[in-house]
Length: 308
Image (cartoon, rainbow, N blue to C red; front, side, top):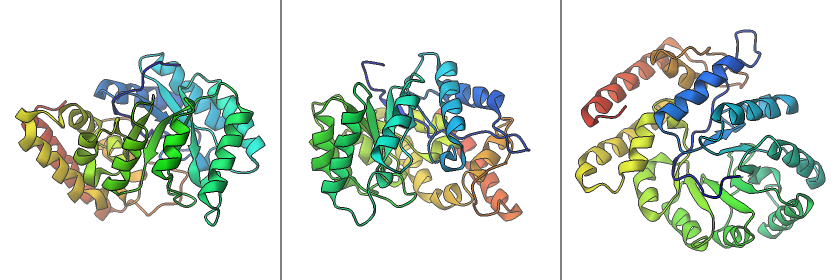
């Protein structure tokens, strides 16, 4: 396990599939390298963007192990390791996926407690998970599926203080909430990684360790540049333009995702099938036209700012 937490962009990785629906491991190798060449500080494998709910348990382990092997220590890897059911069962899979060599097992907060359960129930189950898996390091992800369960700043502070919860992917969409979590975990070996790009710059300036967003599956170089330059006094005009890009393109980024991300990668010349196991909106000709326009806009802005 790495002693330091990555500072910067951590992509939520896609899973390339073959046209017959099988995982394309050669494509996964190339995709991992694309993220790394773009400057990713870490990798989040087996996440929602990876279509984790549509993978078998063996496939979840296989793609995570593959990413760890390809990364080969260049950056740390985290991966989801809790998929519902009794905590004892979740603990067993957490141990299996941790054994692949990842830095932290990511807990889906909404699979540890039901929507009508209290924060106390969530913390009881989180502590049970820690107890059943001695030595395993964890992170949290406020995944919106099956429902979004936000962790309070107080609870996050308590978990960070254990020394075994080091990572948090935030989806609160609330900069004040993010600031509270950063404050509550101050001084701990812990990082908040924000998924919400409408306040990306504000989050970084508040002390987030980095960004972990689906936009990185379209133009990772831009997200890496933002993480590196958000406080650069010589780049404030460019930073404002990138922030505006992230705000204005939210609709096209999220519609028919992850198919649109794979289409965007094709536009970049990356060999990936549009195949997805998730049931999402159709990537129609109209949608592709919007993505084409996004691609041209990002290319032009990147050239102006010297990105990539």
